[in-house]
Amino acid sequence: MRLNNAVTRFSNSDPAVVIGNFPWYEMVWRSLRGDFKPLTEPAGGYPAFAREWSQAVDHARIAPRQQAPVVTWLGHVTVLLQVAGLNILIDPTLADFAGPYGRFGAPRRVPAPLTPEQLPPIDVVLVSHNHYDHLCDATIARLVACGQRPRFFVPMGLKAWFDARNIADVTELNWWDCAALGDGVQLHFTPSQHWSRRTPWDTNASLWGGYLLEWTRPKASAWRFLFPGDTGYCADFKTIRQRLGAVDFLALPIGAYLPRDFMKPMHVNPADAVRLMQDLGTRQAMAVHWGTFMLTQEAFDAPPRDLALALQAQGLATESVWLMRHGETRAIPLDAAV
Image 1 (cartoon, rainbow, N blue to C red):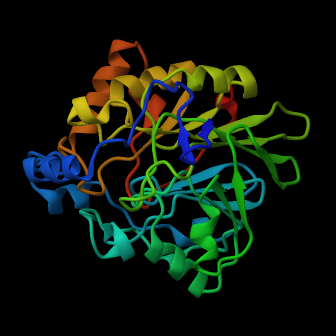
Image 2: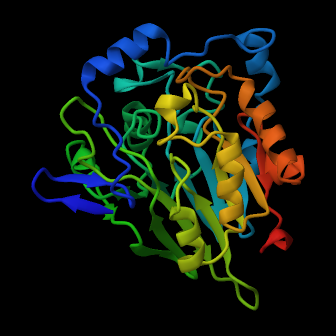
């Protein structure tokens, strides 16, 4: 991270990669051109896609606290990670739209598998950056309104957003900062190649990144989980492995990659995602950031097809990246540790 004190703006590890400096009217003409919605529907249409890729949440399974890691995909980038007795909610976005107040912006085509009120007690909420499909005002408001009092961890420059909503226990992190979550559990804020903006006036005024959780187990090697946040392919992930160690389980973004001339610096496509996975030394991942909101040009069912081709090209098994249904819960095997 580099902070330009003259204009109070954050930048990427490679300062030559500047994202977000396009004028407001470029976003308008790209929207009118159709850059921010799929060019085709998924096979069978959106209702059929939603039926195929959804399942009921197993509330009895996620209600008790877990020691060994268990993960539930709640659509797009929202992940419930249960490990070491902690319930950790990542980028909670459960509204019908990815936009202001959860009522405007990109529509959700696969219904959220649960409501904020149906979540188990949440200990920690992690927010990767301030884009509307990652930081949802409506979801956060409902989470707090129903009595949840988690610890929030957010990037530098984003605490003021929570202060304005009278939300307490918010910690800002800079890249490579570390915080203790519990006995033997450390949280590291890691770099990614992206940008931030919530209004026309706050471009890159807050940081972005990912979260590496390290669980030091008694009489066993440390277990590492990484949620990388939104990112283009870059050298940051080799650096993460060098500084913090290989990642055992990865929430791998595979969608929102077309048109490539616009999305490449900020969002990996499936081929780049597989390279990112290899850079981290990861053998098992789950796919996120796909099949939920109408954000970009690729069809909803394109990322799994492109991912299968990318894995095959690298000689990797299809099951090395889980394609989970919205609402699905899986136990993460610890014997897959790298």
